[in-house]
Length: 241
Ligand SMILES: [Mg+2]
Image 1 (tube, rainbow, N blue to C red):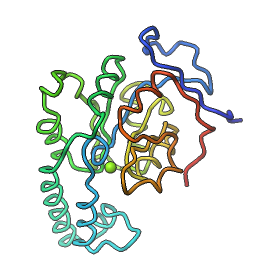
Image 2: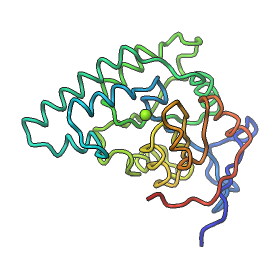
Image 3: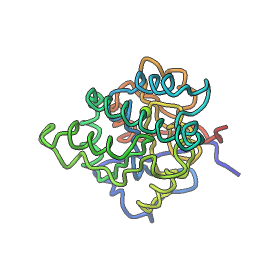
Image 4: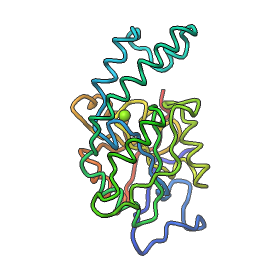
């Protein structure tokens, strides 16, 4: 029997998040880690670049770009992968931190809540973001911008499968339902819901139709702080399609 609601206890300085032997029950739990999508979540959206990829690679409507490319015969596949890398590299130059990110990362760091990145992008783009965009002198708090683990499309299967979130939970020694998955796309929300995590949508101009798939919707990343500080209650998790 499943429980009618999921209760998440507040994170506060008086509550040590560590030992797992506390009063967590089947439907009362703590957030023990936050997983971030990269493009459109940590940094400004890549919507136009993703659209450009689809057009240049002739991806049929409704098909996933990376899956489509992975099924191409060898010569075309290689060329398509190079096209994707070239577009991603160009997108790097326009990367900007999303509003409220620094505040949220500082809060998580202060409360010793681990942070991870889960992206369908490539590892070079993540490294570039960490080195060039998340500058060590940002707010004078370089230590808040650490993410471990960093899971890219080298990990199979990728989002929206729940496997990468299970992997991150195992790395931290926590349960998937103790994680928050923050993203700007359906892939992030489906991945989070399928894993039993809290699925959080960072809203933008083009993604509000994903709101029904999210447990929590944010206008900016720092809004997540008050949910974590005060605790929150969600309806019973429903299996995503
Ligand atoms: Mg994204």
